Amino acid sequence: MRAMFSQCLWKRLLTGAPPVGNVLVSWSRRNSSILATIGTSSLTAPVTDPSEYRVEESNPAKHTLDDVGKFYQIPRRDFRMYFEGDLPRPVRTKFRGVGDSSIMIRRPGLEAIHYLKTAHPQGPSPKIVLWGKDGGGKFFTHLHVNHFAHSNGWFLFDIMFPADFFRRVINEIVPSEFMDGCFDMPYIGSKILLHIKIQNEELLSKILVKEDHEWSKREMTPKGVSLLELVNHGIARAKHSNMVLQALIQELKKASNAGECRCLVSVAGGNGIFLGRTVWKIRHTTMYRKAEDFTLSHVIAEAVKGDFNGGGVLFSLHLGAMYPDDRPEQVTPLTMVGREAFHVVDPFIPIEVPAYSPREFRNALDYYREVRWIDSPEARSKEGGLELEFLTGRWPQELWNRTKWL
Image 1 (cartoon, rainbow, N blue to C red):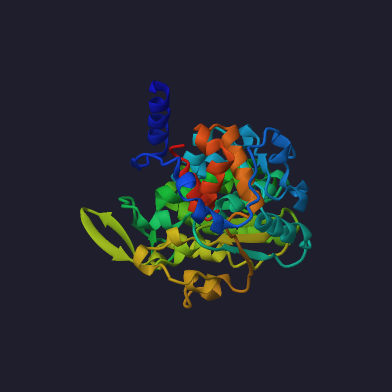
Image 2 (tube, helix red, strand yellow; image 1 turned 90 degrees about the vertical axis):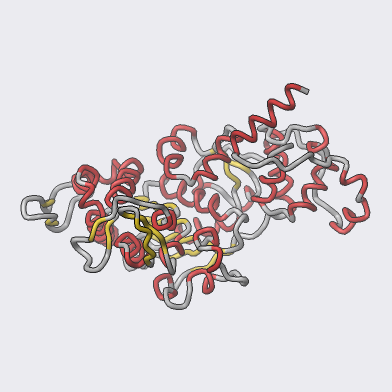
């Protein structure tokens, strides 16, 4: 009993979830008639052979349709160094909860990777938009594609959930020196630049700046130096970080057009840059502004235009990036972006990220059993899996929420 209590307490502290009461593990036995509505399920008894739900290949470029529904592990060192630091807190919590850096290979991710792999190095950059209801795994699909780009030598211009930049109470906001009527976020800009430097330091040191960039009367980055010097200036001089981001985008487009690198502009929760309102506090005064009043929203919008060759754009839409009052009843790319801003992402290749298929759901259960996220005997049984399939509708986020206490 003490061990069970300790485990539940550990999960509660780790996930930050409120108590949900006792889990009715006998529910399926008392409601067999309801479970019958599920129909013939693909769920079987727990699998003991990891090869049924795992693949050893860690390079996403080598994943095939035969691997759909299976988990692969992002190498621990790469995950911690290049990806973990920029993950939203709820996603970091999931990885730390299971103590593993594995993600599922799904068809939407393979489709996006296929478009990037088959695009001509000197041809137009495909623009891919991941959409669908929240809780379907868009972020993990996004991470799968990001890992493909990083593993195969692409330059990864990666920004996660820009809506968080505009919804926080931020004290460090200054009038922009290069965009009239807008505000800079020096700290956020330097943080983004540091993340980009960590992910792409080798490429940054090889690509040369194509034109002079003047930051003030006494400070400039001359033509011919490496992009690393440009980025280092934005990190050291946070005041100029938003300007440096704008210059970096311009330089990356030129480098990609010249064939010096292949660049993936990756923005998760990108519809956050179209927020109709945001709130920021300065000198104890709360003021409402649109996201377009901040230079970072314009910088990101410029990056996702896709007006360069030899690269790609990955843009995912999340209801969580919108205020509750602004969330549409019908989830489509148009309703999540809005008519006024739709021209920023159009034209694009839409890829919907749906709920788990029966096979994917079965493999997710087997994975959770392996890492002991699902630990109770009842939940680890075939009947427990049937109950979870019914209660969750095979939605990944709902499965995670339902198994926190199992």
